[in-house]
Length: 253
Ligand code: G
Ligand code: G
Ligand code: MN
Ligand code: NA
Image (tube, rainbow, N blue to C red):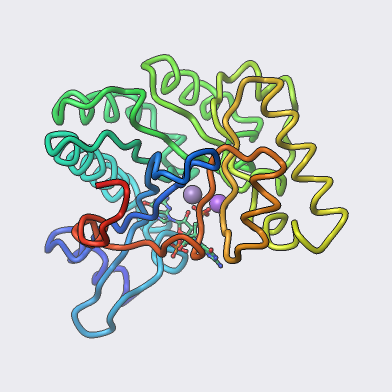
């Protein structure tokens, strides 16, 4: 309850920030894109995880305001990077509540136009369990987003239940293999078989495959061998403020 008021203030007083984590090409090792991850730096409590405050925001009706800010800020940052000559895709996470908001497609389109970025440079990550809900509304919004040219990515793939026909019908263009499988890909026959199957399925459907949560060189090597298109995780880089992406002499910038 106390957090609720604090969160309201956070939105108004710019305590929310986006950090960015690189998504690395498995083929070239270059940075293809980044995932924007929301951070709340509370003046007294310090950083608070989105895993904690997103559910609070959802419960108290703040998620649409926060979500709209995330979309606008990610597009603004992408526009700024492009103006400096870095053409990088930026991914944002959409919550289940945002997929019930009919205005979201409009919001995304407006933000893209306002900051003059191409729709194909924006990726919307939606978790498998949310995307595959039976809800027609969520499906309609996914259709709407892909209809305006935005890349739709299924996050935490392999932990929910996807109907394979839905994947095809919904014009999704990216699958992110859940960390659970990435973690054991180099040590477990089963995890390896699952990753292998996901990559083959995705490629057969013309989808890009991203492995998230890559923490070691052994995992990286196994994932590249299995054909993952992009890799993301602490092994390469942690989520960081946008100005640090610039500093690191990263191949991105
Ligand atoms: O970066 P971190 O591990 O703290 O993120 C924790 C969770 O919060 C992850 O599930 C991530 O997808 C989610 N998350 C991060 N940023 C956003 C955001 O902008 N919107 C939503 N809805 N979820 C986010
Ligand atoms: O739910 P989603 O996949 O969007 O969550 C992304 C979360 O995973 C972020 O909170 C991010 O900080 C975290 N993350 C990113 N890379 C790694 C990693 O290599 N290992 C672990 N354990 N978490 C990671
Ligand atoms: Mn994500
Ligand atoms: Na994920």
